[in-house]
Length: 155
Image (cartoon, rainbow, N blue to C red; front, side, top):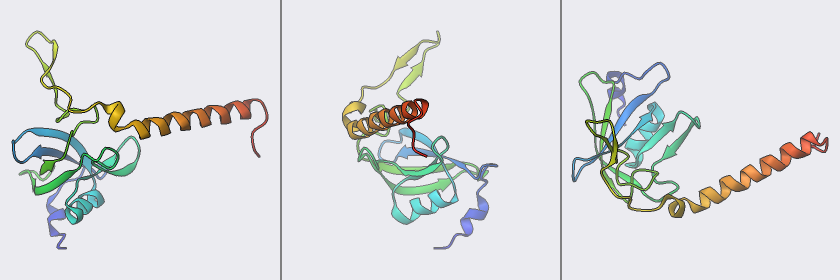
């Protein structure tokens, strides 16, 4: 693959660039996430969206847990080269809270938060295995910390 286009992109000091994800069919903005060079190249290669998680410090593919994948149909960048726009076919909810778009809240002129959509799915159903695993890990961590505090930890 010709990677010359990378020279036109302006990644920030952390090597990241914001990626706006838009549903191609409707034009609706679904989400924003961060990409680095490798996740961008993997997105182009697989035609699925890959991002860099700043909090977890790892790559993730949209839909890897939920099955709600994004099929990339078009990839563009803005005139400054500092923002990507990915037009996708969204399968299921884009938002981890179960909504089609992460932008499901509006702010009224009075400052009130208003929902502009209904969830497509319940997150606890979609991510039930992930939630169970997180709870299991927390229990293990708690037991390990208790053992260490009691002086029974492993050497």
